[in-house]
Length: 445
Image (cartoon, rainbow, N blue to C red; front, side, top):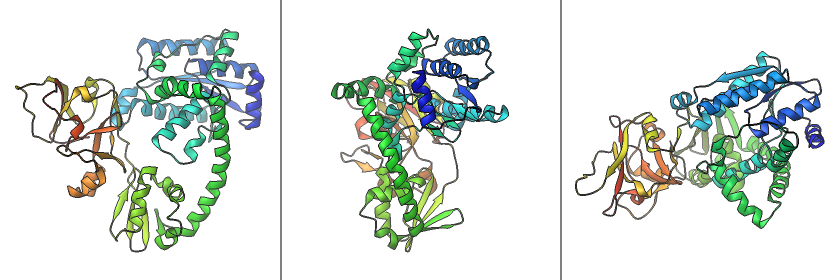
């Protein structure tokens, strides 16, 4: 494996012999194997460890293992302890997103302060394939199907050639000590569902599916480079920059409007997801004043132009709720709990209180910002309705629409928070337990 490791580094020109590398080491099998391989190469390395303080004593034991490994091998060691949950609540993002944000900001700080050239992370081939499948499931363009890159800015991924099985074999052969994160075996997280439930089925169809998907990703990466140049050339022909705005000429765009893939690639840098491409095409034939929003930009139809304007930067709202008690940790939620259904329970008519059939919910629940393409079945209706149309019918202002969030279960909208429940989750005569959620003074976030 050492030879494959060296060949992968050379093939992708990840770093030069004289470069100093800061290794991101969690104490797990991947990062401990990566550290061992770099020691074998004799590379000038340092080790950085993040303690996210999420697993109590387990997190401290991870840190102790990495610290002892660095000390034993006389490797410079850097560590930090994060208040990850507090950071997630403050910024209105998930624990996973908070951890990623914190660690990469800190890695870059340590890299610069201590004159390291690159940060090495231990993503492997399985991670790359899982990312590719997650992106495919959620909807993505060509770039999202290429998976992780071996070199991105100052981040290198020298283990992308190795499957998890190959890493485990190397670890066993070389008696490398590591610690296992028990959450890796749980299937409540998307990546673990892909890892433990989806990929085994794909391997039944094609035992070499990981290698096959990796070859596909590499071919798509080459095509993506060609396509990016082509798209950039078209963008120059159909748009101009006016200050912070990008302005598209609709007449020139119309020559390409039958190619939805091309329209998607043109507007994806502005946060337009695949499901919103249809809204964008309708905007091109709509009337002046019509407008759509992505998470990052607004797109306004003004006569023969589409004016793309960056939205004010604000924290993305995303909470993953694994237990009912987690709901009260979300800003704006006053209380949440299970109530017994029956003749004695009266459903409050306030929009700030939701009464939901708890047996119809599947954890983890998600609280997030609404996005283009979202739909639900409004309480009392049997037909689905796009949220964008619902907002128009309810005469939502741009500000109110921009501040609207939803409660979601298994990809289904349960509640437009502070407004309307979904018909599929309403309390009925057969309901035995009710999840009751109350907001603070009709306000949320």
